[in-house]
Amino acid sequence: MKILIVSFFDDNFGDMLIRICFENLLRCALENLGVKEDEIQIEKMNQMEIDSDKIFSSDVVFFSGGAMFGFNYQNFLENIEKIVSLAQSRNIPVVFSSLGVNHIESCQGDETRLCALLENKTVKYMSVREHPELFEKYAKNSHLDVIGVCDPAVWAGTVYSKYIEKKESKKTVGINVVRGGLFKANGINWSLEKEEKYLSDLKNLLEKEGIDYRFFTNGSVLDCNTMKHFSVEYGIPEEKMIYPDTSLELIRAVSSFDAVACVRLHASIVSYSLAVPSVNLVWNEKVPYFYKNIGYPERALPIEGDVALNVFNEVTKLLHDSRYKPDEKYLMTLFDFLIDSLSGIFSLPCEKRYSFEQVSSYLKKHGVDESEEMIDISTKLKRGAHFYFNLFNADREKHKKIKELEAENKRIREEYISSFGDSDGSGSLAGEIEKLHKKLYKAQNELENYKNNYEKERRRADKYKARLDKINSRFIVRLYNKIKKLFGKK
Image (cartoon, rainbow, N blue to C red; front, side):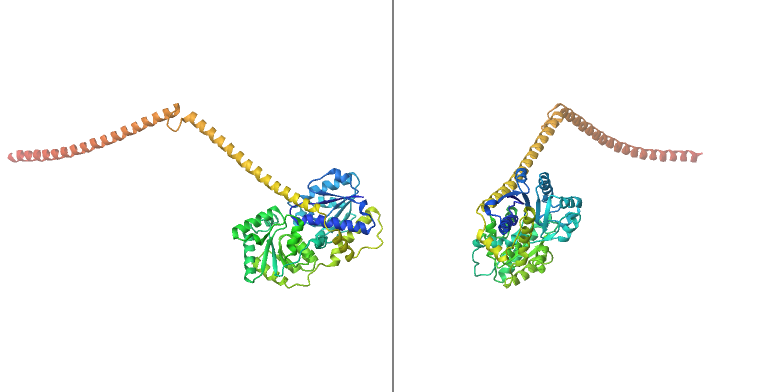
């Protein structure tokens, strides 16, 4: 029996825990159905790196779960369609398990694709972890029943139980840190500056009450970069920072807290699996759905008002919540779904289903294969290399643009020199222009001299005219006197 598990491989280890816990539950369900371990061959495939050979050689394809449905910025749907199409070409049954929606509003973009995917006869079973009414809408013309189940990672505390260390005696709050662009990508107007101020304010409030704290991420390279930037900007000591490099390190980090202020959903899911109470800021519809499912809807907090104070008030209450623990019935929903789907596909009768205690015992006994640590580290290295490569390419593009601008600047300068000469005035056209400037300057000087001479001559003429007028007036007076005397003598 060859089973292919399709999941999202990411350095956000919540996604890795989905697959890890799903595989362990799948193996437990197969044992419950009487299938021996040596009769099972399980392959893993990253849904973003499609391997047709793995698909074609499988007896069934399981999508292990997560927020992969809809038209979100991670562009999962196109790859899911390709995988289902490849399975359909060889009549290989497909099972969707623990489906979630990353952007509920995005599903209104092209509903026909979503309906077609669920109406495909290759898809034999489907279960969802959130938005059952939405999936019922898109599956109304399909043969599928929409079954509500838990996220596989709610079993993480059990799967990793033998690796969990005892908590310190001092009460400690875990503060989850995410990349600055997460909120913008989800339509939330909360910048990196606002997030870092929230983190700092929450830290200050906890310190004032004498409560210890640790900042941590879910492992993502970008989340870790944001936390590093925050620690430098606000002077946070390194011993207050936890940078998980594997799923196990994330589990151990969360297990050391007494309460958690989460942002990433799987910080809350891991906390739940470890019976560590948490609150979570709402940046996506999947957050309040999870808290509704586990019976604590009030612990999904909106990003509004004094966020740090609101989180502080709630998270400090959690330090005294000794009754918080996973709901056994809720956890068993996924196991029951796997029993039903495996039994239906392979015609395997189930005489008696395992109880919660039996499933827990199996998971604790088998634990996690050491190879998962290497897969985590390898995935994180690939993601880091991917981001570095993008920065490298962006840097090369900028250098290329600089060279293009420098070449254009050189071309324009040479064209100018050939037409107008160098800056020292040499060059044929430049020389002619200089001569014309000199002639114009000379003409302007001559005109100015002419104006000055004209003004001088005009003043002289006015002077002579005044003297002449004076002379004429005297002449007229003398002539008049002579005439008067002449006529007087008569």
